[in-house]
Image (cartoon, rainbow, N blue to C red; front, top):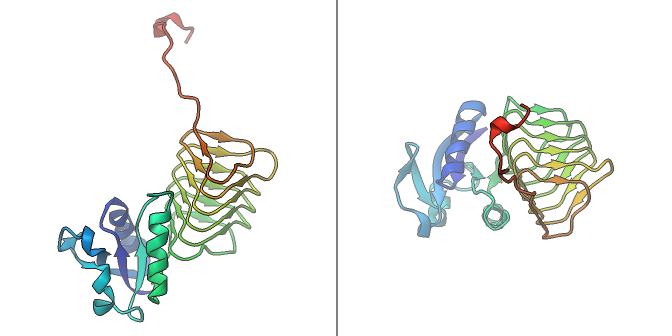
Length: 221
């Protein structure tokens, strides 16, 4: 699909480089960061350009970009750069792992990163600028709106709607026996079990494990 510039030079950019180089038809040609954040000339053996000068080296008609920024500010940092790239006329590339089970007939939007071992069931719709880390189950008829981040081993029941800017932590379960909507910018911490719809901007944290004041040999295991 041609040349690709990855926006970012951190751990997510490193992973994006790995996936796009080994499991896509894109050729990663450079990284780009804002001038204020540029601390080195090269990364992963490729040049690091400034976003301010990117169009001089790679005009929008000559390459695609992928914005590799994590969930900082509830995904809004990634969304700002994503929108800036679109305003400049760049095509935003998406990656879906060849080791993902993607059964929906509707492809994801642009600037999505869907890693290995995800199961995307039929009739799922995934918006723009969404990151799905490895090993999630996304149930049938689920809608994941723009600018969301779902980490690893999350189970999302069918008919769930996840509104924009949500973050769902590892091993969370979204399931209520009826359709559930996560309000915009909901934060679901790792290990949570959510059985009902959430209000926008709400935060959910599980009850943490506590140490019992007995020795393991006193149990019946």
